Picture 1 (spheres, rainbow, N blue to C red):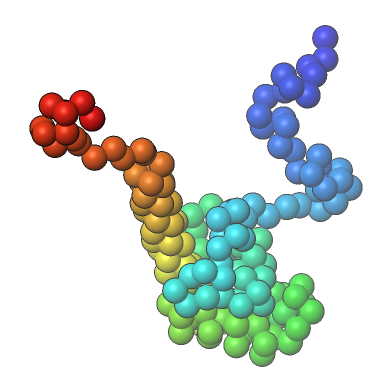
Picture 2: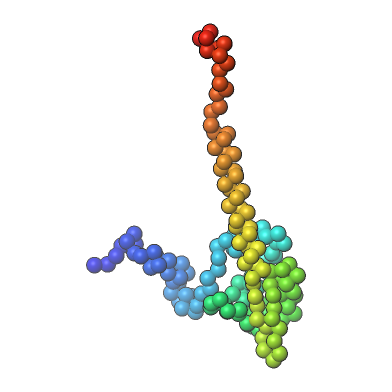
Length: 158
């Protein structure tokens, strides 16, 4: 008996091929945090879309906790820009504190995004606090406040 879409396990409902196409998904896919996609422009030092795209391209080479190490040339080719443009993006992210590049002799750089991850985590916590405070303020505003009656008003019947 086939499972209906409503009864499929969550993982089966979220297949990459169902979101794109089987043919496109067969070429591979890159998991990217929705929070990153929705908030990279809200960071203390906001990212430009080209910097965000650079990060996504580098993350295409991150399979676990280890630092990815694609070449500038490969990233440049995939982004359709020059290797120098990619180096400038990396330098900009480095200056913003979001990227640390471990330069290696006769090997490609390793890219560490610990600064970016920390900034995103802090932003997420700050936004959660803002949301909680806004809810509290709204709850206070929604409560109907009736001032207590003075004893002489109670004795007089209102």
